[in-house]
Length: 51
View 1 (cartoon, rainbow, N blue to C red):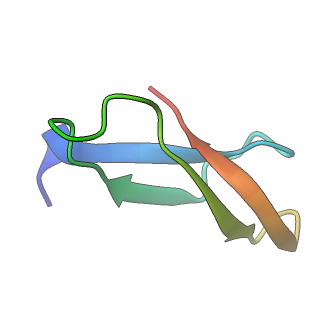
View 2 (view 1 turned 90 degrees about the vertical axis):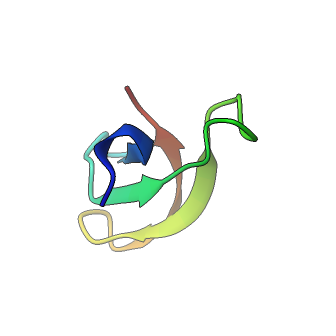
């Protein structure tokens, strides 16, 4: 895994970081937001990219 393309995905409800994913920084300039399952909330919630 390349560390420069790795981003953390934070749950918008519980503010925990259950996911890491890759992002092409040349094509995607804005912050990534995906709807994923949070194992702490136990439901599908929007996850936003953090620093």
